[in-house]
Amino acid sequence: MSDVRPVVVVVGAGFGGLAAIKALAEEAVDVVLIDQRNHHLFQPLLYQVATAWLSPADIAAPVRSVFSRQKNLRVVLGRVTGVDASEHAVVVDLGTRQARIGYDYLVLATGARHDYFGHDHWERFAPGLKTIEDAIAIRERLLMAFERAEMATETSERDANLTVVVVGGGATGVEMAGSIVELAKAALVRDFRRIDPRQARILLVEAGPRLLPAFPEKLSAAAKTSLERLGVTVLLNSRVMDCEDGAVVVAGERIPTATVIWAAGVKASPAAAWLNAAADRAGRVLVSPDFSVPAHPNVFVVGDTAALTDAAGHVVPGVAPAARQAGRHAAAVISARVRGEPEPPPFLYRNLGNLATIGRRAAVADFGWIRLRGPIAWWLWGIVHIFFLIDFRSRLTVSINWLWSFLTYKRGARLITGDHHQAAHEV
Image 1 (cartoon, helix red, strand yellow):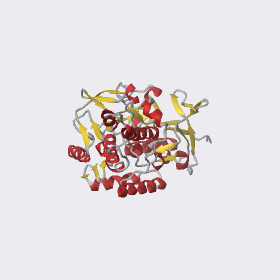
Image 2 (spheres, one colour):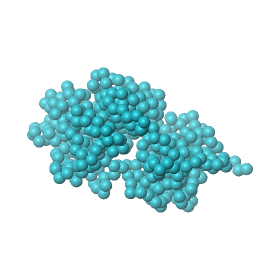
Image 3 (cartoon, helix red, strand yellow):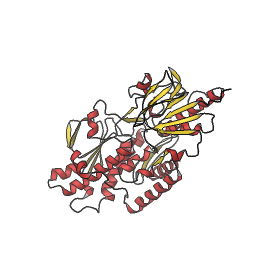
Image 4 (cartoon, one colour):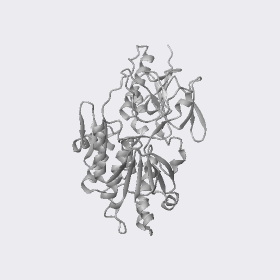
């Protein structure tokens, strides 16, 4: 019998990648994790970094620390630029040199980025939210807009800086809009002398007929009502036609604004191109029921990079619980093959429910058998998100920060850390 253990390479330290790695902790395999960042990020709370609720370290943890006790794991900090499936190797840019890392099994959990639907030049004016760098950049744009409004000499300049446009009425857009309006009308209200932050105008733009399309219509309507009560202007059936320096064109109307935030769509990583595999319109790899790639049965694609309809006929959504379940299933298939045992049955997605917060004491929750809204859903949203944070330190610090903000209406992460003169010039 050979003493050489199979090598499982996992690309991506997101929810799917981490779930696969943890599931392989006791297997007789050597696991290699490759990621261009050294941390795992809890993306569902990333908007709270962008709106100064939390600091980046509150929702991120170094992957080496997370897996310090897992002896069969090696971490490689690098950017994957391709996959040589015929040679069973991953091509990695290590910064100073290129490397090839061989594998017996490969799990691609490379996530997604925002999609501008053919208008990639809009990203300069309307940044999306997928990474800590994105969140910090948006936070600085928001805070700098209030600073520039304070110093404005013209009414038009002040009004443009006090106008924020959020594009996309999904969970990210809804949560972002609600958090921004609370930042302006509660946290900042006493901090300026020449402007009243409560006069800030926050617009939420959605091309479809309702917000939160993944939720039942009654909860979507409740979310819209809650946002409007907070002071958000909701524009439905309104498509963005252009983004430019200092303005956005929505349904033919030019809206002067210094801050546009993009939450309208996502596109998958280039995994399909690496593998020369079939993909859907969003670039997600069309995978088999066990998340393997049809032409490469030892390559698995999970999370936002995979497109799959499960054994019950349900489309697997691009959410954190689905990515975790996919990562664990791919690991179970690999474990069965390594042990020479029968593989698990085709993947069946377990819908644990959908949650979205709208503002202080307002949220919606859909568990299929029960639907909640208002304060009860808000408390449940907070408990669930704290529970799923990566470690105890994160759970503790987020809980304390939330409690402080709830009691005082203050936000402690309101830092402008970049070159604010350059940031103002760029915006």
